[in-house]
Figure (cartoon, one colour):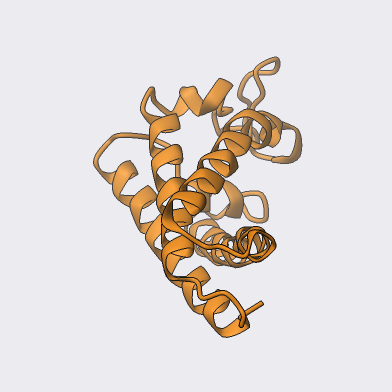
Length: 159
């Protein structure tokens, strides 16, 4: 494994993914702010939550990119289209598995079965994150495919 290449392109890919998600939210394509949702697990202060969530999101991006790199290394091949496929699988997993369990681990999120309260004020994502807008799944799929495309295009396999 080429550690230098992995770290460089993991940071670049995570920056692009995070930027794309922020733009998607800013343009109204989704109401979901993953850094806010993740950070608010740890604090009720929304400003700090965004900061904590952005830091955690970057750390997660680097860690998760390691899985992409290990797949590239096991295939002895890294291309944009392999990265895109891994990114789509990753996004699908987030939409179908991770988002539905969020209400169970998030202390400030209502669930599909128990509505909002004074302490549980975040809306649950719902199936495929659709409670945050009908284009939410598309924004997640596209941003993660591009995450994989960046990694697959620029990661240099170990010699």
